[in-house]
Image (cartoon, rainbow over all chains, first blue to last red; front, top):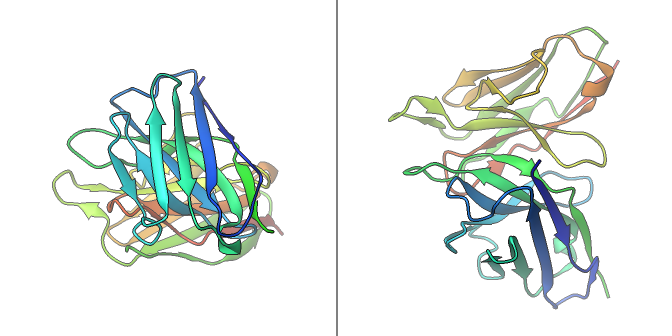
Amino acid sequence: QLQLQESGPGLVKPSETLSLTCTVSGGSISSSSYYWGWIRQPPGKGLEWIGSIYYSGSTYYKPSLKSRVTISVDTSKNQFSLKLNSVTAADTAMYYCARQQYQLPHSPYYFDYWGRGTLVTVSS
Amino acid sequence: DIVMTQSPDSLAVSLGERATINCKSSQSVLYSSDNKNYLTWYQQKPGQPPKLLIYWASTRESGVPDRFSGSGSGTDFTLTISSLQPEDVAVYYCQQYYSTLWTFGQGTKVEIK
């Protein structure tokens, strides 16, 4: 059974960099059939897609976050990571990693497996 | 961006009754080359991550009870729970994957009346 597990600091200071890692188990991150994405959810609010990455390193980012976001992949560790710099209180959210269905020649599709999420609070 | 708008924001339904949630996209999510609607539905229970319910607007994910059904095409979609059960209390989200700027609806909270 595929599992995704987010990890990283739960508290980040304003203006600093939020760094999270998603570890994939029960399946290979190097599969050609999936992208891997980050989605966040501020407390009591809805879902916001942040970005997605393929095992080759190909990425999609939400344009409004693109200047602050970097998503990378480490196939040797079956992990992918999120870095969000210059954070503010508005970046306080539950951060989820998820698997995204993909089939050439199309763009990636929906998210079918999600991690349990990790709450990141931005506060001094 | 394709804006996804759900209605209502919340609804309360008696056990065993039908619950209907609507989702409207700001532009069509029907891809002409394959005649598929690039629209999915998720269920999120309190304290849990979203769970995939339906994709391609009407295809039920494996293991999802058949009381959940999706319909619609183009810009207007509906998630129907035919007979509400206690375990269906949750927030439901639609999401489009027609554009690579993936966007979600604001969510619809379903409660028991």
